[in-house]
Length: 490
Ligand code: ADP
Ligand code: GLC
Image 1 (cartoon, rainbow, N blue to C red):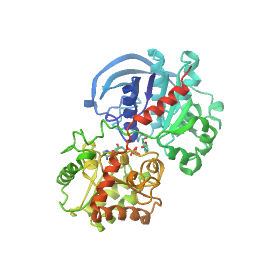
Image 2 (cartoon, rainbow, N blue to C red):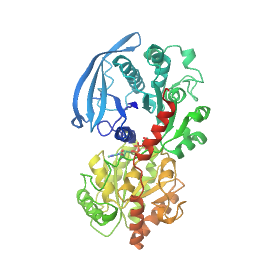
Image 3 (tube, helix red, strand yellow):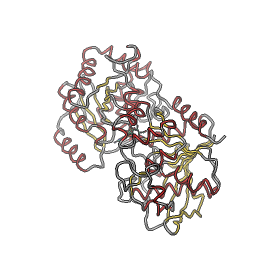
Image 4 (spheres, rainbow, N blue to C red):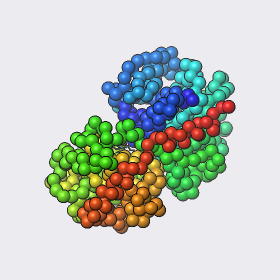
């Protein structure tokens, strides 16, 4: 099958969060199974260019219709760790992707609406006719709309779209100028409740809603989240839309790329290890302590790796740091936040804890340190208020690091509580709490830290049980292929 992914991120060159990991990992899995997969991305100025091989211009005459005229674009091709990627570079004073940042600009909506239009124009003009276009999140919600309203009639009748929502909290809501910019026009038609009109703001056009309505199949990134968005306020206003389109909506649990996240061959680690050589994990614990100047003592390390965003439960993370210390554990945090208030709060906390040899807060982004933490920590905390899937708990499991999670979204699908879980004791893999408050968090952390201190052999057993889980792309890869097969033009 010929699949083209249209996305705003790919790991490791343009990564803000898990979306980047998913686009890379799914592409690799499909290729391994013999399918032809290409990825279309914006050519951001701030990509990690050293990790793109053989980048060169392949198409220089792309004119993308935009308002009353057209914007001239070049298209580059390059390999990102073996994946075939096309990067679109517009030449216009708007300088859409030359902002030194992936997101966070006032005109983000127009930037990605432009990208969506440009991606389709590129397919159209270059003669690429994939069986399936797989696009992701609000940034590419307009892709199926443009395909079926414009390109289908002029030469792309057989293309089908799978649309995956990674985060319902960001839907891309804008005004009618989106229609004029992309030349869709006809506000009376598109700004209709059955199409793009936002379910809450009557004058808003919702890109994600457009994606859900127009795609041949829509998914979100875990089965539990697929249920949450239909039946709870986690659908962020799109519940009714999803329910109307429920026959073409489902949850596919993300995979974790075991080629990148594998303690048996991870080049970031001080010592490789696996389930059969778990003692070697402790070499990594020592290496982590050395790197972060933590005291060497008989204490467990609890870690948090991830964006410091409200959805991640920042107040609970903050509480967990103090609670871990009060229970005799150490705490390591790696994270950053684009939100100045959250950022200030954690810089303040860092300063306050600066002289404590049992805690280290690294406020920034570091792929290498993330690998070292998953390998060196004993437990990884994911206390999210909202989590469509979550990848860090899967990474932790792979590294024999026990996850402590809140029962929400994909976290509820992947972690089974050691004491109260629904699986037989030999198949449980971590700690789970329900209530997003201090008492809930403490109940799980107390049990995890208690087991580490009082029953080390049982803690080890739990680590090994986690490592035995298979959260690779193997199963989700097949799941997506079934969806592609189901929607492709016969
Ligand atoms: P989200 O997509 O909501 O951010 P996920 O758990 O799906 O959450 O994915 C987060 C990804 O980003 C993981 O690969 C995680 O290791 C990585 N990550 C997040 N913050 C950082 C950071 N500060 N440094 C290194 N990696 C990070
Ligand atoms: C989003 C979600 C996260 C998910 C990731 C990859 O950023 O917040 O839960 O794991 O996308 O699908």
